[in-house]
Length: 611
Image (cartoon, rainbow, N blue to C red; front, side):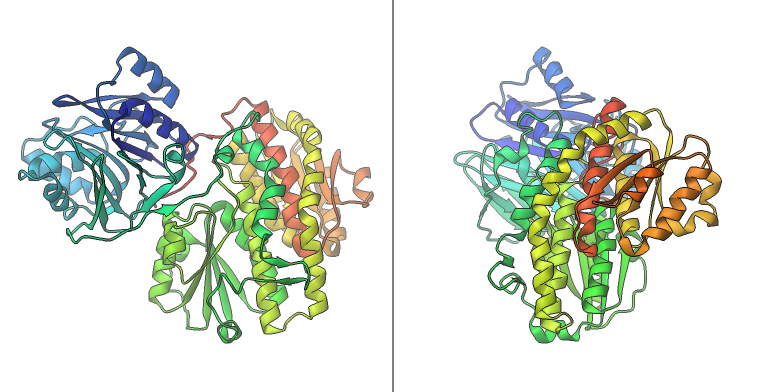
């Protein structure tokens, strides 16, 4: 989703803004621009394409006089990608300039009202309405004017606002779209993501919904949008900046795939007691043993890759806890009249912790009285702050739009949560828990071994790079992984890909199989292997090119599949954390083979902060 940066201090703002925007490129965007106060005016330079193109344009038209500015990377919602729709946007008088993330839901009626008053619009965006409202409602005080404008807005927005009326101030506003403030010494910053500011400061103030801030070079004043002062102490962020660099890899995606052994270690650190072979989450969760004993139903709510992790979580909780579990797509769940009680637990999963539909679903279900546990990667994100309980994945910054290490870290948290509650409820013996913990400890080394499959997956990618359609098959927990493998392939290679339960072939899918159709068959579930193997033979008989994934030591698939990858042996519930690794590599190399922008796939954003 769109990215915001802002700066006020002694430095030339242009370079600070550009470097911040470069840190936000992973979020996905189609245009970029900056605005800098230059003397008595605000100058804007923007255009379609990458931040590198904006840099080049600024080389010809530099904005190096000013030390106060705002910048933006846009992901088109209202209006096509174009220079006229790029941010920042001027007000009619050019006395105000703003950048905006989110959607103004009542912009049509506001636009009609402004047009009747004589305003003309230079873009197709909803954001420009806010800029003109600043002109319309200006009363001599910029902060008070911003507050009046906010009262007219409906929807989701994070705003960065400059005005020539008060050039020594930068105003930030947050409502349902993330915005953070970086606190420096003699300088201050705003951004839609912590990673954009780590080069300059590690001290962050996370704005809450309904809050705004007035930044000067010397300080930050936080208040509600009604003007009530808010006391806020900056939090210190300890992220390793190296994790936000490629470090010799061609792309962030392949770097993050290779970071998974470390991410596994970090996610399990302090949570797996090697001496007792037990899971320790009591220092992170407030729920008592009695609370856990009362839970009689679980909903897992998420979007995209996190939803696929939730499908694995369903298997984990039902098998380990004997509790019924429903997994729901957040964008659907939020509009259902869900039946819950105070014995219902809702687990929301979001890598960024800012996913709009997941947040809305969580707020809806909390209002109904259910307890919410969040699984997220981002400390102090909206999901983390609003949930009753939170477990962090500790995967580190994930820059590439396509999620890899965040997904597998979510799986590990779900495994550990299931085992922890099983310990409390007594649904597993101590010996069984110890066996699970032993196999859990082995996963990082097994992932390391699977990363050696890179050359083989590169070969698979070369074989399918000219194909337009590809299918994944699996049964049981293998099907949950097939869905994630299919999503990875389609989102970065642009090959049309679908995953199906192998048992559904005869119910329609076989009609799509023709000579040369690639079919990836996941057959790691030993219990269902014979059934899945039979389905693989069915598609092969109809001309499919078959690629297989099965467990180490199973040679029967070699005789039927063109290519086979072997997964190290582990417990059935843990196989998804391993099976997905070659699928991630397959998707990566397919994207490279087709010449795509691997880290920034078209039309997609890292954090979906609007519905």
